[in-house]
Length: 237
Image 1: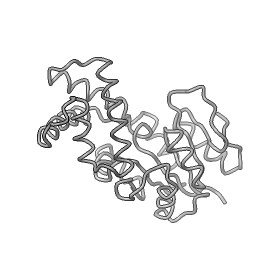
Image 2: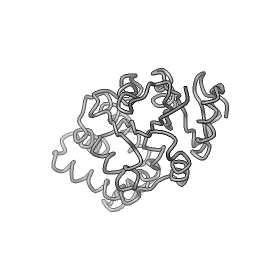
Image 3: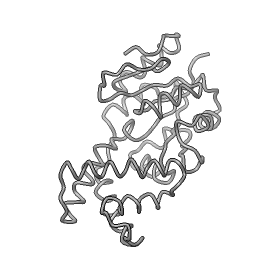
Image 4: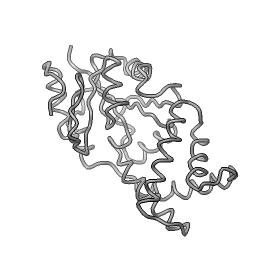
């Protein structure tokens, strides 16, 4: 049967998270009188990845993960909740000022309009992604928004994908999942029975695994979905 739905990741798929994060933390460090260089940026990202993994695993709430990131980055484990919240809020203000969509997002959504049901499945906070999508003018384009804090499990757990399919009211084999992460997005979707589409914006030389479709830009998505309908083998591109 033909594809009837498309599920989307948000950060670094629709929304330029990496760019906004870089701008946000460097501006925040400058405002705070701290060294704002590539080494600081690297430390910020290392701390984020380590602490965010604990949020995805359900070990920390969204607020707790923010506080832990502030404490770890500032190397101050005794930093009070109040000061951690205040420091992180300063970063968030600069980060949100830099929010923007990738330029290929709206044209791709317009090209797919009316042909598929659309939903979002994100490993983030529901409140945070709801606000982000509304501010970026995208929320009305999606029939559903599911996030790991509400589900109780995160991508690549098959239950996350199954829950999103159930919410769309479609079986997995009639849905494509589009995301920038090979592991959590494309492989997770493939293993849950969906059509995993890896949005490889950086143009890695790595060959996509069996069963994974790769695109370099969302401009290529409509044609790839048509190829999937025709039964084209994944992995090309």
